[in-house]
View: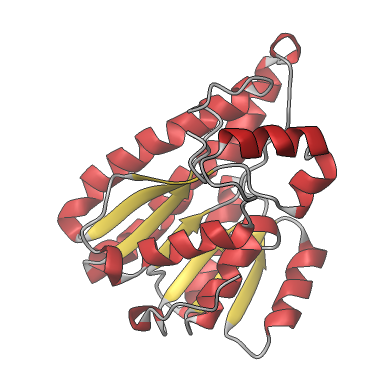
Length: 252
């Protein structure tokens, strides 16, 4: 892993990351704290989240427990972060859950739950932070997609549908909020070797197949995505909006 790249404009900014307690989200939180950003994150899993806060101390990091499928709770959590740290200047909609599921097993209830877990909260988090960004005439919203729909991955149709929809939402947000100086982009991870992926799905055969398909013959780590997120949050990407930024080692 390379050392931190410096983005001086991120120092002191208020950043909110959803799903920041583990995996890619935790790597994003770590990177923002290295930049001196005033970083908050939401997560439903309290034990790993509080462990992350303890590990990062004395950096300015704040954790709010939140079930993102409960939009009223999400709105309260955003308000709590604002009360603690001030208006949110960067939103990273990272939280998602890529459970596998066969087409024939999907019920309407399961479909709605997957949309709630992987898409719906991204919109309502953006809606919650937009007024302060509009008032400031600046802000960066970074939504998280997935290459799964780009590669026509099977075995998780509700997840791939939600992730395909993320970028359509991003482009609409970019259009509506652009006149206020607010940018919206999608970061699109490939197969990232988080602890969850390694525990559930990464086999020697799957890894060999992945590396054969990727242009870069190395596995991708959460920090690879985090570094792209930092770039999109900073003024170094000031002219970038409504775009997909793919971090997949050349898989797609």
